[in-house]
Amino acid sequence: MAAISDVARLAGVSKATASRALSGRGHVAPATRHRVEQAAAEIGYIASPDAASLVTGRTMNVGVVIPYVNRWFFGEVLEGVETALLAAGYDLTLYHLGEPGPERRRVFDFFLARKRVDAVLAVGIDLAPHEVESLDRREKPIVLLGGSGAGAARLSIDDRAIGQLATEHLLHLGHTRIAHLAGLGAAAHGHSVPGLRRRGFLEAMSAAGLTPAGRAHIVEAEMSLPGGYVSGLQLLGHPGRRPTAVFAASDEVAFGLMRAADRLGISIPGELSVIGVDGHEYADLFGLTTVEQHPAEQGALAVEVLLRLLGEGDAVDPLPDSGAPLPTRLVVRSSTTSAPR
Image 1 (tube, helix red, strand yellow):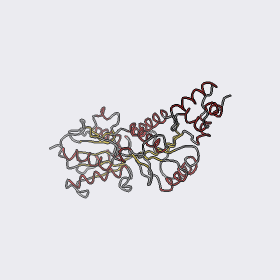
Image 2 (cartoon, rainbow, N blue to C red):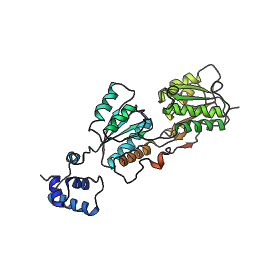
Image 3 (cartoon, rainbow, N blue to C red):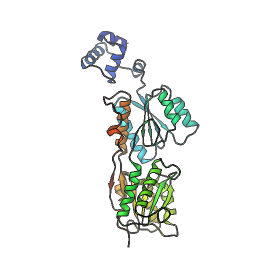
Image 4 (cartoon, rainbow, N blue to C red):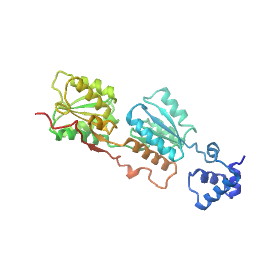
């Protein structure tokens, strides 16, 4: 059976060069690549991923760490990540992790830190300094898509600005009794995604002269449709003066809130305007006004940055646009209208 060493000898190159030429990974002069491919065809050599790994030191595998696999946003990101990795010749290993604990420590200290992956992509997870340092010591590049982690390359939308934009949209429609359905832990973790969206809401309300101690009202909800429904019933069913508009921290939360309003006999948008965040595939079906982002494209872009850090690209700076926030846009639909008289 032909081996990579036979191809290298016939082509007059090193085994590492022959491996790069046949895998398409790394720079090889066109003439050299052609010579190696001819040699491989002549002796009937078929590249083995395991053998290439021994030559290059690469596993051609990326570890993807994600907190949820059953939420729309994370599913869309994962689809974009997988498509981009497969197109680049990489496989992925998925780690479903949430809060710190023994399982999370085992993944970072053993599976990710050893030679099972070439790099790590963390989606929507806040990494502790020791988790980032553990990967850095072993020269495993790490890219964050959302979340946080000092010293790691990071791509994200501007969640604080999104909170401001969504709230300002309601303010411009004349609403003053505006509530916010924030994600769980938003108040306690100000630098998290829910925390930043909550801060943007409060800053927009304060700028409009509506202080948190006055008319601004915040209820925390699990970032899901059932979470929005349960917290929406709590918010809208309160015997006090009901809000005329709600900024929901995600589209799924907004869908749950809209279902709660329907159960309570509150019309949307006549009695209640609702705005969300994400650009969910069902937002148009629900007529939901939202601040739209593009998670599948974000996943593909994160892979592009990761490949640059692995030396697969020519760009020096791994972050697109020098780390500028990823694009979003306000999409107005029928769930928001002028404040009722």
